[in-house]
Image (cartoon, rainbow, N blue to C red; front, side, top):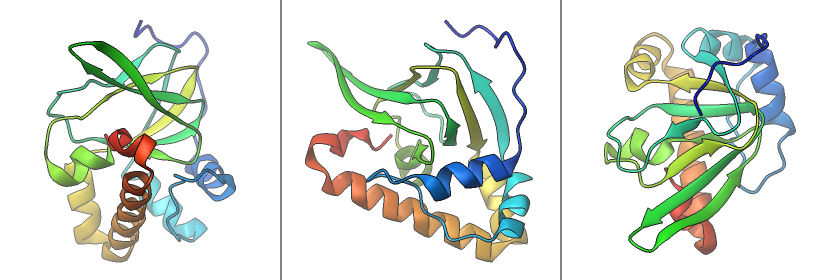
Length: 163
């Protein structure tokens, strides 16, 4: 399920910026950063590609990595004793992992690629480095993630999609 991609994907943080700027989803990630600031942020992010079926976040895991989706789609699932419930589909220009990133709590849901996807990750350590070296960018990123969490929590059917 987590096999490597057959064809290498080219990454450029400007592609991520474009996906974010063009997203019109209710839960779009909307930081207000210049192109130059995106280039700086890109040096703190780790890009990677995944195939359909790849599990990005496992419910209950202690990982706090934040993921930004450039291309493809992700599904968010919650599992209880009665089975699996799909909570949301995450489209390009949005983020997942924001709940654990801020709360330090275990992951509240499982996130899986539903197609070949281009993803950028940000660990808490790299965010801390960003905050020390580029505080304006780190603050804007945190504010945009806070806005994303607020909008997801206000959407009752998708409330548990805060991962």
